[in-house]
Image (tube, rainbow over all chains, first blue to last red; front, side):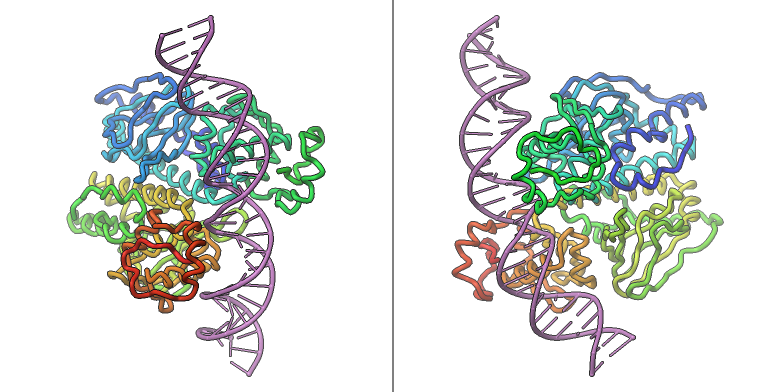
Length: 271
Length: 271
DNA sequence: CGTGCGCTTGACTTATCTCAACGAATGTGG
DNA sequence: CCACATTCGTTGAGATAAGTCAAGCGCACG
């Protein structure tokens, strides 16, 4: 495993995606490697676990003794705000490391549960601590793992005040696993909670994107039809998507017209 | 120096304030202590620097060889977004540690400059690295420093979608240094940039808070007159501040009436 | 002394939320 | 296996918080 420099663009919009794809520095794998190299004695072993939809990995406030690495499926993390409302803090797919709080012996700030059938790898904290004591490299990777979390949060912070279409488009692109195919096992309500939107808005925007031919939805699967367009929307270069143009055009195209020829990704966005 | 548990409320709104007050785990001081205990040889020494208003501490992209601890004054950190706009990421007063990126040998993601006459303590990265190699305690404090940054970012994220009055009230309270006295050396434009508000809105809200008697402004100094009320606003328990009540009341009190008797912090908020 | 910038205030616009209604999907108990 | 309840998704009409545009004033700085 090499310790490559993160692409500078990681700092920006596509953080969630890069967390999945660019998992060159996965601490779980680093630990495995570490264990192989030094035949040290350690307490406990990494184990695989399967979770069903709705099953918790850990609860907020737990004093966990493991860190986790998502192998397949989707895990949602959430916090309970002082007013009692649930605030979803992320959806995590294969490659993401969860539960770093345990490393500094703090109660978990988030809860984590599977929103889909999910498998995870569970690594005892003791193993990480002992391993890092023996290796300056693993040491630095721990700091790096925390830094990556900071970069992710900064990215979220920078898009959290964008417009609703921007946030939704960015979210969809960030969840792209296979090329042009996105699996969204969570409800609109959960997407809305995560993006600070109301479920109605999520629904309306998905319909709008579909009318524009940017994507098509089939239950929980979404097929990306025009990634460039979605990227433009996410970046805020929404070509003529101001309501001025819309109000000018909304009399013209009301229904589901003109699916075929909107590849040039620069045209008014119907309401 | 004791390593106390962070107050749970740190996770929530008042993060910036707690970073100033509750700086029980200041890595700069930890390093000093470390140096005293172990008479180890090290490269470089911590030095004090004075900065004038507008002077940069470091620029975005710099490969810094120091971490910094703010001693007095105010430092603003900012990023340049892909569209070229400046996004302010924080205002930092005495006690805050800046420039942790340098520890993992990354270019600084933020720029930092003084918005006021400011003194800082500048510590060579090498000193921190060497020190942490010799002490498991300092090691953990490094992780802890990163974790605190994560907690702060999560706090910002949780309030960044609150209403404008909530965000501004929280900001003012977070900048309180001496009891009931706040120094805001930055412009309304900068406050707005930080809070994702437009300068006009900042101006209007400050006027509104003042009309309500929550505070009074004197140039860059703000006196807090009713911290309870501001706290309520920040928490979103804005007592009858919905526009329904306002529109009902706005005919009654239009000017700057009734300054004296609004201590009970539960009354409609004039527009 | 003028020019520019920061602050204030007003009038208007608009993106998003709220409320409401309805059908479809999903799960539950008999 | 069916009847029922509950949640989910969709769509419309209206309300509202905050942004935009515009104008005027005062201060600082060259």
